Amino acid sequence: MRTIVSLVCLFSLVLAGCASMPEAMRERFSPVPPKVRTFDGDVRTIFAAAKVALKQLDYTLTDSSGAPTRLEASSRILTSESLGDSRQTVANLHFHESSEGKTEVEVLISLQVESGSTGARSAQEKREHGFYDNFFATLEQVLQERAKETAGK
Image 1 (cartoon, rainbow, N blue to C red):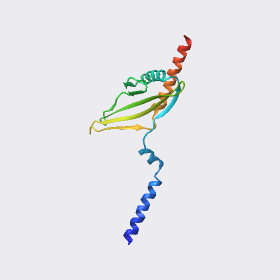
Image 2: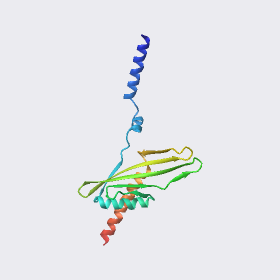
Image 3: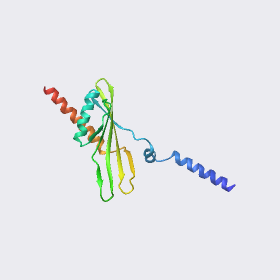
Image 4: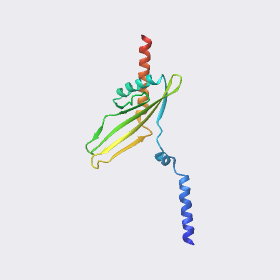
C-alpha cells in the first residue's frame, strides 16, 4: 500500500512539474521564430537591397533560388586551432509582399559547428544574435541610399 501511495505522489509531482516548467526551458525546446521587419518597397526592390546589405556585412550569397522570395547567405568560416573546430553563421531570408508597396523580411540565423576532433556537425538556430539588428540597419541604410540616388536623378 505504501508503494502505491508513494508512486501516486511521485507521479503527481512529475505532472505538476510539467505545468510549471520554467519559460526558459520551454523556450529552449520550441521552434525559433524568424525576426520580421517590414520595409517600404516591392519585393524585387527589397530583395536586391538585401543582397547588397549581405555583401556589405561580408556574407556570401549561397542560394537565391531564382525567384525574389528566398535568399541564403553565409559568413566566412571561423576556425579554432586550439579546439579544432570551425563555425559559420548562415542567414535564411524570406520576402513576402505584405500590403501595397510594403515587403516583410523574415530572417533566421543558424550557427553551424563542425568539430575537428570528432567530426560531428551541429546546427542551432539562434533566437538572439547581433546579426539581426546589424542586417536590418544595413538594409535600411541601403534602401535610403538608393532612394537618394533615384531622387537625385
